[in-house]
Image (cartoon, rainbow, N blue to C red; front, top):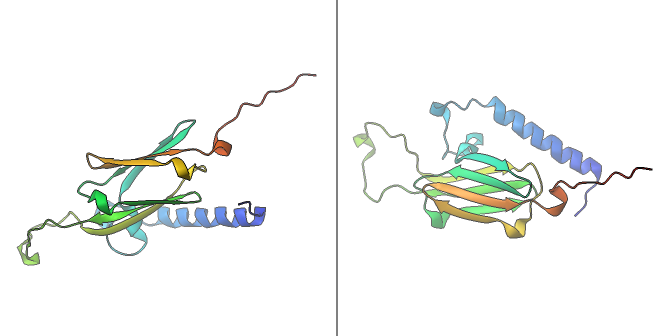
Length: 151
């Protein structure tokens, strides 16, 4: 669906403002509250995003996640990863913990992709605590060689 240039500019401005707020929020490890509501909830899972001429690749670090709870969605240029990290089935009273650093609960993270992708051809797998996502670029996002005519 084609949009007017004004709508595209507003959408781009909205993403830039979101990135500015994300950069403003301190992300020291002791401040990451990955499973609590609010802006910092997007800090989990940690990701690497890279690409080549045909695909974008996301590697998301998510050990201990129930693969059945994982949900990936793409809307326009936004990829959302959500799921749940459950507690171990044994019940431990809170006062028994000496240290509790591994958070549990539901999580959601949305990242803006740098190019349009072909949503129908996305593949994903969960392997060794990593969510590995391959997203083929749309044909119009791929670079094209343009022949220059000499006259």
